[in-house]
Image: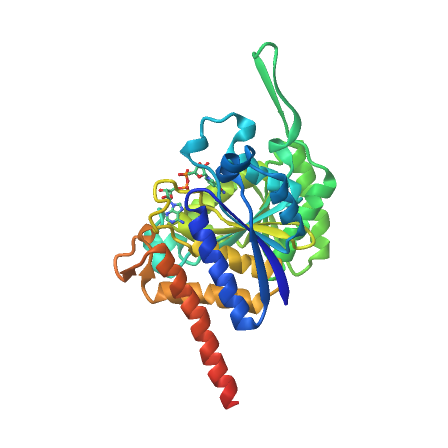
Length: 368
Ligand SMILES: NC(=O)c1ccc[n+]([C@@H]2O[C@H](COP(=O)([O-])OP(=O)(O)OC[C@H]3O[C@@H](n4cnc5c(N)ncnc54)[C@H](O)[C@@H]3O)[C@@H](O)[C@H]2O)c1
């Protein structure tokens, strides 16, 4: 299969983890006889420095033509004092909007080797394996008007959703649950907000189309509590933009390291932008300390969600599990035992594992 991938390395550790992502894609292409072509473009602070805008037009055009987009990270102290429209994050928000990526998928999985690094008791976090499906392009962050009024004495933000916007994200959640443990928790604030009451109505209507999926409704405050008291009870959580923003960050600390968390932002036709959850980590940029596993797991999501390459995605995920199981870890994982490796060495270990499996299978094929 031929696929064209746009790489947006961005700032700080972004270029380091993007290099690892590209190497893993090349290893997958080699193993499965795919042809992956790549082009790199600027975004965020790097784009501000080169083009005086966080999202140059040629970056947008290239992304629109791509089969998949990988983004490293944007931002850093160098650009913190710039006015709002020139901030690196504008590049990220802008590209999601331009590509119409309405669904943010954030899996959170507790790795056995890393349970001790969780802020929760090991027995509470053990077995957690959940997916947050967050609406990304509507709600309070985009509603108009939003403005100061009465000479700055009052302020308004607007929470608005079209029924069709709720329907498509709810469908995405049901579809995701069908290939997982078939359980959806829809999170809202229906005791207070009209938008949440419509959200609940849509979930109730849509569930008839997915009879194999069990549904529960939960208020956002209760969901926030259950995420820290019983995270393993969740499978798929679906929610609107702001609730999803907060809950996905809460969920992200459960597993102990930001360096392990992948994410995807997708639309109905499968085109997507894949990125690690972490930021540009300016404190370790250029030191080869960045954990590339969040990026490598984001590549697995790209293979699965945008390219329909499920076996390839499982090979990448299995390689990550195997490397961790063998005791290799980067500094951020703070394992008591095992061997600490640099970011690039970690990427090489995963690639070796992908290729090692290849060799074993090839040998097996020769004997059959
Ligand atoms: N999606 C994005 O591009 C994104 C997301 C969050 C923050 N940011 C930006 O990144 C910059 C730094 O933000 P921050 O410090 O709050 O968050 P951060 O995620 O960059 O870093 C938080 C801490 O985690 C560590 N860390 C993060 N990723 C790591 C990795 N892969 N391996 C090892 N350690 C890792 C960092 O060293 C740091 O100590 C800011 O400019 C912020 O706006 C960007």
